[in-house]
Length: 302
Image (tube, rainbow, N blue to C red):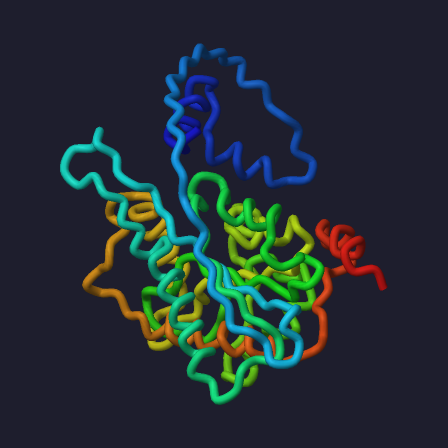
């Protein structure tokens, strides 16, 4: 249900949506009957299509059977002929930026003076926008066993608004990958911050979730919110603006005011983090409180 429809429904029940939302944030909140009934009808059309995941690999020099994985989804929302005017959902931010980042990180590994100790897999997955279908397929039918996959690093919508001091870690506290990220960020003079909107459940809404379900420690970094040479609150404002105007819309196109310098720095961070994992022999673990820990323990008993 869209927010506007929910607000209308609450008005029909004599309630203010925003006030009820604030009340629901209280631990003592109890459900409020709306006293409203409705009749719904839905028309649905089933269309079967075939699509592909695309994968490339750099062979590890010492432990080729151990894999560090980079992931980005290459799909978007397609075309909607029912729209007037522009009908093409280009997905420039979501997720041409992440797909381009995947290619550039692969290029950086190729240019490195020595191959990594472990193998590095570059996976461009399909049908993320249809329910993480491409990454789910890989998670259930992996080319390399989950037990031998060290970590998955996901890239979904890179920074388009300039350089930041920080990086937002979605799902901070889930695994030992946080420590690897912190060491990498410190080397670059950057800081890590938790997701400012955890209530939106982003850790469960992008492709890294498919790998987490398979037991593989999964990492997802969003753009930071502390922008250099910008006023406080600029980052949060740009996030909200993108969500309101361009998220899953035909307007998600390359903008004249895009500044990809922040994306370059974020990709440098992700390259270095993956290179650290690929050059090491450690195995990051899920946190004691993570719901994904039991799967990993069954794969890799101590």
